[in-house]
Image (tube, rainbow, N blue to C red):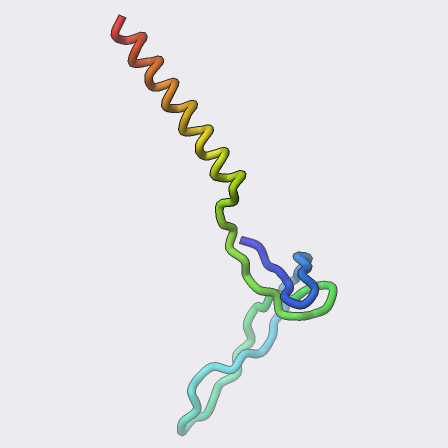
Length: 82
């Protein structure tokens, strides 16, 4: 998981305490709490959390690992049958 700035596309971030409003109002009103927030070091914008997904290179590596394990399995089965 990485963080990315939506404004400048930077990935250099830091965390700071920022107020966030919780609650839905009503008789007691909204409550403000301090939360740890990811901020961009370059422009100060709130950074978005980007989850890492498998890229085409990741699929290629996964396929190669599968082929190697499959070949080793059949090699061992062949040697055991001798």
